[in-house]
Amino acid sequence: LTTNQMSVSRVAIVSSSSGQIEELEVDGTSYEPIGDVKLMSNKQNVKPVNGSTLHDVALVGSLCNDARIVYDESGNSYNCIGEPTEAALQVLVEKLGTTDDHYNHQLTSLSKSARSTACNDFFSQNAQRNATLEFTRDRKSMSVIVNNNTMLVKGAPESILDRCSFVRLSEGAAPVPMTAAIREQLNIKILEYGQGMSLRCIGLAKVENINPSQFNLRDQTKFAEYESNMTFVGLVGMMDPPRPEVADSIAKCKTAGIRVIVITGDNKNTAESICRQIGVFDADEDLTGKSYTGREFDDLTPQQKMEAIKRASLFARTEPAHKQELVDLLKASGETVAMTGDGVNDAPALKKADIGIAMGSGTDVAKLAADMVLA
Image (cartoon, rainbow, N blue to C red):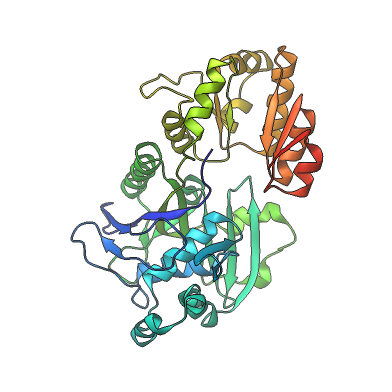
């Protein structure tokens, strides 16, 4: 439904212990590593001064990340290798610059290929990445251990906030306690970014003075415990614009009597906002009984689930098992189900659907499970 070319457009950091939020506006909507990052209050450019909160934002964005930006000479364009969400964070780091003014002044003299990762290379060369705690759907986050004493974490903002006991202020070296007032203001900002601006939100955090020798990194059930008592660093809002042709396609489906149901891992508010843009929901439509999170759906009784699928058109913050369950329930209610997907986790639902449709750019597993592959 969306272009899947992410770009960070907003960064929010806490500026006072009362919960006041300081926002940054980020220029650019592509993977080109050039653009201004300005304070929205006074339009001044900002840089990650050593030891500052923005320095922490850059460290998490750069090091808690497996993507890479590459320059394609033949197409004169910048592309990403890896997850678009992580690529957007890499581009943010390039736009922020480094903590070394001399290094920053040399950036304009680099080739386009070297410039694509110059700032991320700076941070990776000045920190040793020791281990990765892979993303799991229960905690909705991933983290890395650097320099054997610090954990850098990113993930769904609500999950990150739940496990933060402290927060970095835009001014001030020492973290302060995460109060109810600060948490409330951050939740308001998350709602504004998601529901009001259709931005995909990522929370950034860190844990200092850890002892990795006490961690059992083979046991993923322990990861949330290790990622606790964290210090909140910042909130990032990313644009992922709907594809231009989507709204017309959904309108044609409705005319043909085809009901469109969106299943996504995105935040519910963001997903609802995008669904209004593309015509799944009307602009002012009451979404009671038409939009659920995976957890809300899990809490329903079997009979309530059968009733819910008759009206619902959006399921957000879902896991792979929800896709299979929804296909089963729809088929049990007498519907003919066509399912689209491109990932390995989509394969079981593609197989169960009456018509499984994989994307040409998708994984081989998804293509093999599908009845049809779109070029």
